[in-house]
Structure formats: C-alpha cells, structure tokens
Length: 343
Ligand code: DAH
Image (tube, rainbow, N blue to C red; front, side, top):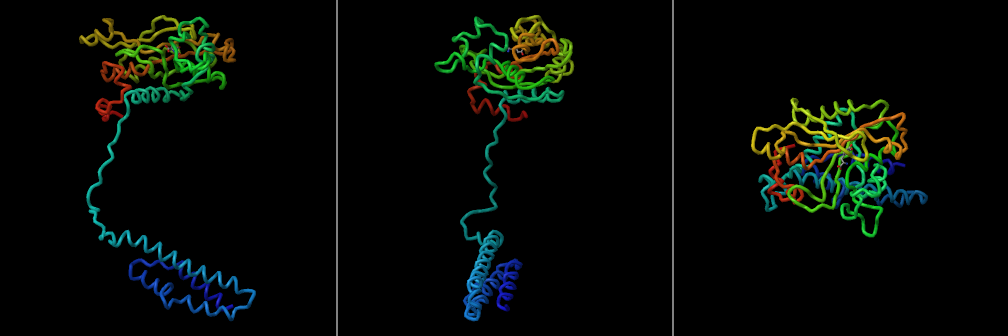
C-alpha cells in the first residue's frame, strides 16, 4: 500500500532529522506541524483505505503527528539552553555561585579512621555491630559474673523496664557476636560507640568510642599480640615509639595487660598527662579466656586468640591537645572548624 509506505518514510525522516539551529527547527515545524503540513493531506486518504485497515491507518497517522511534536518540543527545549533565550531572564549567569560551606571530619572520626586503616593494612576486617545489646553478649559470654559491678543498674544504661537489654558498655560484645556467627580463623576489629552511666566531667562521658580487636586461630601467641600492638603503636605515634605491657585484669582475657606508649617527659604538660611517668596507657589486651571461647562454641583445646580494646576520645584528646572531653560531643561549629585542615 503506497500511503503506508509514505507514512513509514515520513516517520523515518522525523526520527532522523536533528535540527541544529532555530532556523532549521522552524523549517521542521512548518513541514510537519505548520498549517499546511505534509501529514494533513494523508488524512484525506482514509477513504481510499480498505475497511479492515482503516484503524491501523488512523493510528499510524496519529503516531506520526505525535512523534513530530515530541521531536519539536525536545529540540526546542535543548536549543533554548544554548541560544541565549535565557537572555530575557533577569539574572547574571556569569556570577560565581555561592559555595556550600564544606564541613570537616570530626576529630573522633579522624582518629577512628586512622586506627581502622592501620589494622586493615594487616588483614583485619571491620565488623560494625548493634549498640543496643543483650546482657548475654555484653556480659555473660564475656565471662563477666552476675555480681560484677559493671552489671549494676547504676553503672549501665538498661532499656526501660528491662534487665536484659542495655546500651553496650564496651565493644567487647562484638567479640561474642562474631565468635558465635563465624568460624576461626577470625581476624577483626570492631569500631563503635559505647555507653556508661558515668557523671559527665572534663575527663569522662556517658558515651564514647572504642575499637575492639580479635584474632582467633590455631597457635596464636602472646608474642603475636605484642608484635601486632607494637606495629599499631608505631604506625599511630611514629616509627620510634616504644611500648610496654603491664599485667592487668579483665574477665575475658587471661593473662591480661594494659599497654602504654612512651610519651616523653620534656614539658610540664608531659609531666601532667603522664602523671610524671612519661608513659601513657592507651589500651587493654590479653589472650582470650578459654571460658569465652567455650561460651561462644569455639574449642579452646584447638584454638587460641588475643583481643584488645582501645578508647578513641582519649587518643583524640592527646593528639589535638583537647583538655575537655565534653567538647567532642557538643558539636560547636567553632570547635569543629579547627579540624578542617586534617583529613
Ligand atoms: N572492654 C574493655 C573496656 O571497655 C577493654 C578491653 C580490655 C578489651 C582487654 C579487650 C581486652 O578486648 O582484651 O575497658
């Protein structure tokens, strides 16, 4: 059928034409949409079309018209952008824009990210876990007995009307989460926020951040832990940094230790923050207690491991010489702005 061929031909033309200027677009409009457009006379052909084909003929013609309109509108829209028809608008497009004020990283995030990077480099994965914990993961699994003072209502934030759910008091709860859901070898760090019912003062707060570390495998030794922590201290505080481990006690490790880094004793401030010793405590650590492994379904006859936990605020305060922990949680922009040059 000749008129059908004609319609096809026009459709191809409409789809392939790309009017590139206002003039060309006007030619397009006159040809396909103007009062004497090329589509109009085709409608008169309707009476020559067989009855069975009338419907599809009508639809093809309408489609042709629609396609021409669509093309016209879209090209008109894009040409408007370029050809200065915005000149009529009462704005000066050459003015520089008003920049959005850029924020900066929070000092806690800066330190947290550094710690994470240091451990990621030696193959520790990152586990982020819930802040609302049950007492099993926070205490029981971690070998902390029922009568331990940390379990006291006065020491810990329990959820309303609950003695089971609480805001985790340390990231050690993630140890239990990971050991009950993954099989050794396990090598993770767990950064996050923790809560304690403490009176807020310049030195302590009811919320703070920790990074937990856990390494479980066959034949993991205390020497492995010490070497890993020495690597951490040197990455964090400089290649010459010295560390020492002092015996300590934590219910979930045996033996347990606290790690100090040597800070120096040159200035009066050094004396003050190291209490005259030159050493600064930065984390707790130890070999995972066999009871903890058992509680989490790991055979202590086959596997051993070490764990550590460090506070982040304290390290941020040392690094940036911040004298009051409360500043870290007030979000005063004048305080936060001072870290905008640090990444
Ligand atoms: N959870 C302890 C705290 O909040 C810190 C800690 C000490 C974590 C020794 C450990 C560890 O994993 O082995 O004070």
